[in-house]
Amino acid sequence: MGNDQEPTMRCCQDIVMFPWFAMGHITPFLHLANKLAEKGCRIKMLLPNKAIQVIHHLNLHPHLITFHTIAVPQVEGLPLGTETASDIPISLAHLLAIAFDRTRDQFQATILHSKPDLVIYDLAHWVPALVKPLGIKSMSYTVVSAAGIAILLVPARNITKDKPITVAELSVPPPGYPSSTVVLRGHEVQSLLFVAQPFGDNGVTFYEKVTTSMHQCDALAIRTCSEIEANLCDYIGSQYGKPVFLTGPVLPELSTNMPLEDRWATWLGGFEPGSVVFCAFGSQLVLDKDQFQKLVLGFELSGLPFLVALKPPTGSSTVEEALPAGFCERVKGRGMVWGGWVQQLVILSHPSVGCFVSHCGFGSMWEALMCDCQIVLMPHLGDQILNTRLLADELKVAVEVERDENGWTSKESISKSIKLVMDKDSEVASTIKTNHTRYRQTLTTQGLMSRYIDKFFQNIQDLVRQK
Ligand SMILES: O=c1ccn([C@@H]2O[C@H](COP(=O)(O)OP(=O)(O)O[C@H]3OC[C@@H](O)[C@H](O)[C@H]3O)[C@@H](O)[C@H]2O)c(=O)[nH]1
Image 1 (tube, rainbow, N blue to C red):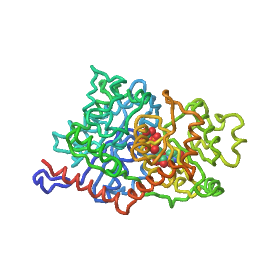
Image 2: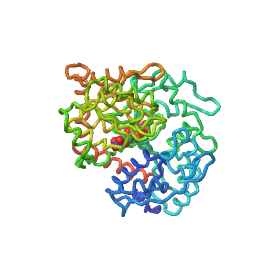
Image 3: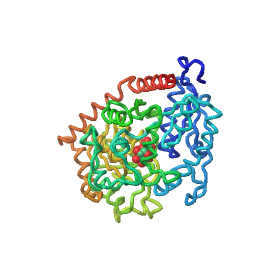
Image 4: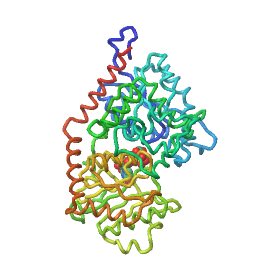
């Protein structure tokens, strides 16, 4: 515990973590906790009970990382028993945000009792005001890319309740924005207008929540690395006028030595090295039936072997019942559409897999960068679009599937992109392969990730020592 009498001797040993109630946030917070525990920190994570049940097995240091249950209050309109974003459709997330803000008293009681040196949190914009008077430092930790923040969630946007942002304003990057490639195009802006909508107690908007969180804390942390997003991180730092500490992507140890399920090992083993196209769209996305059918028809049209792991589309209880007529017979022996969870990381490292078709969620973005498959991207929501621009247009390690001005894609566009990256004689395929190899080698350099954690650990020590 820090010693207020001897500020210069204080060290950051006791940390409270309070992530937004979504598994995509809670899991990376726990990965960071594991890394900090390796350095001797004691971490208390404040989480809903259901989340604790789901992730407790990922706690590698139970004697140092403890979970403290936060009861999620009932909010009108939120289904009974909702505790995390996984329990509800995305359209109800704003109600969960109200419940999240109403856990403030529980948070405060825990802080008063534990008196940590540092609170690491996200989206709980009221945390700095609660902990500062107690002499406790606070740090907002962004677990999505810097790209997902820099163009939208910065003070230069100046979105207020009285002056909601228009599509035209959002189409132009904010003043001083450092990239001409990581930008939004046409129809994509529509999907980001939600930032000006209420997302929490007392009508606070998503934009206010994030910008207040990032304004009022003592330092910012982002789960990325400068090899990929230096300019965007610098821009965020200059916008908020405070240090930005990078943790690196903090991926769990790549457990590719974990055996692949027999079913997939046998199936993939039947194909030539680098020939199979693998597709998965993360843990949340549910396509509508038309999009789902176009997608699988695109794989069929490519003529290549494929393994697609997707949730059943809207209105179907299985993927089988949603497949186009005659599809199974036509792709028999070379194509598989699976409606359940698969071991994405292990599959990506299988020698037969040569191409990854991804929605470019933040986790998948890093997994794509680290594997040696060709990458084809089909983003659907906010940060996935910006991650896609980063990989396809800035780093030039991937190809994005063409969409029309309504955001729709065709089976021909999907097949064209897959064939383009899989054609060994195509210049595009060879350029993205070369660039991808260069970034992969940089990111997998021995010691790179641990240097990020060492530096981050030092950063938080220095932070808590500041008056
Ligand atoms: O079948 C599967 C599907 C997915 N996965 C894993 O699940 C994880 C998915 O995480 P992603 O961040 O890529 O995507 P999600 O859609 O689940 O995330 C969500 O939060 C992060 C944001 O960037 C995304 O925009 C949002 O959708 C990856 O680690 C992937 O390897 C599997 O292991 N098997």
